[in-house]
Length: 86
Image (spheres, rainbow, N blue to C red):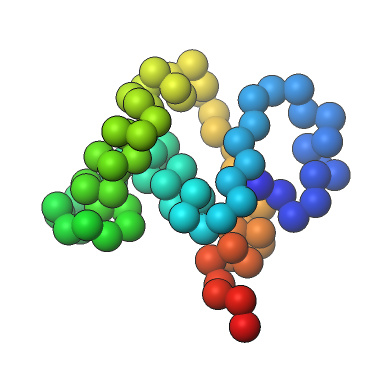
């Protein structure tokens, strides 16, 4: 996820490019696991959200277990995605 791909244009490794805030939230909970303070409520980053994402994409350990580092770029683009269009 990059506003412009210049910093990563020569990257030869795996890349995911979420294009919506929903996709980015799903990816975040999938990689980072749910927030236990949210309990079983059906809200973003909750256990229920995590379970729904895992049901769609499978076990995150199988999909991301081979990685030691996950690099996310760019925070500014994520911020833009999170804001509704005016």
